[in-house]
Length: 297
Length: 329
Image 1 (spheres, chains in turn blue, orange):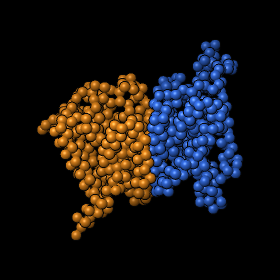
Image 2: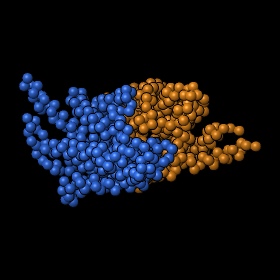
Image 3: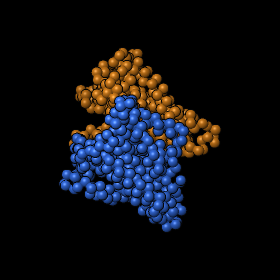
């Protein structure tokens, strides 16, 4: 009996918490992806690089002495104009071409390549490791929990709730959902559709950057960090349903827990194939994902 | 009077013939000057042109964007390396790669063809990524180091044999091999089945009304593209003497897509020109700075925005017009 309690206390529980931390971060990245897809019908292949951009921005600004709590506000704010310009200057240029899915995917893929190499040029290929802003750990029913990880989970949950409230309970959110459902009808009712599009893209990108700021002290910051993250984020978006906010949350929590638990019992090498297998099964059984698309529910 | 598709195919043949003629001159100059570096680089460009061909069959003809074609290229490369280390026979390696390409291509196709559009792109991306992770962590396949020490092979062609160690000889062999793949693809895409693939790209909903099964057509094109990528990959360890997990990474798949878009989607010839262009650009920019991805990424974005038909979009119409004038009354 004590053996089993020990096992839960020292092995299983920390793994679940680690999975939860990753889950919250993945949800933030996936939320941006899914909003951009739900509204613009665009797969943003450079999303992982925007996540990395947020992490690098926090490293750079942290180095000149900007406190961590300010970074949490400043970096996403700085990303808004970046996202706005990318949507207006690049994506809109090919948005109306016949094969929108492919052209926008290719364009954002190219942007990701450029960004990744820019990181390498500016910050060098080696990983940076920012200091943990909140050192120390607390003990909760015998389980040691680093304070920063708890903080990350709390703030992540707060942001996810805030995003859901904005999308489903405000006038702005109603405009976004209307534009996602029927672009032309929304435009005739006076919704500034092109502004909503660019704004939503910028918002999604800012969420990814925020995830980058939050995760930088836990994982290290390196140029290809976005690439490793994007597969799981895409998997979450597909399993949850492209363009679904609730889906991203449920699938994000579920898949990261599967990853965390699977790496305990099976080798960590096999976590990706398992998660991917779930995605394939989902595509076979229910291709539209767990939940409906933004504006269509 | 040939129809538009035949005319476009002929224009591609002319452009490939020009490429082959320049490659032959290049090989002679290279052999005379006793060069190794550039001949090897050009051989590599041709091998990756095979991968690009397979991407173009899917993207340019069937209308499916695969972001994971490196899966098959890497499969061919690893399998060929394993076979060559056991038995140094070219035909055994090629045969193994061919068989594996058909089997794995079929399995992958059954999974990927369940979905279309962006889902197809993401599922192929995911499959390749998972395969790369597994190979990267498998000790018996050399893990992150890859497989080293692939022996030099003599390619027995009946009347004579070519050693993979001879720069000019192996270059000419790979040239012939890739041109053969090109001819095979061009021929297959001109058959009734191949033309149905083009119909799929143009209007997928209409094809079933004409009485054709879309699922098996898409699967056929997927397996065909997979086989082309696998046999191209099988040549890689013969050139370099090793394979590494990078061959399976997204950068390899992504490069193939860049190659096709830069060269020109849906022309086949564009895949060959694009590969030469890309490898050439990389080595030229690479001698200035190691950050060649910035330049190539910007070029690629520029091509997507301003030149959606790629390099071939600039040349192809002129060749077609010339052919029309020449063939007409």
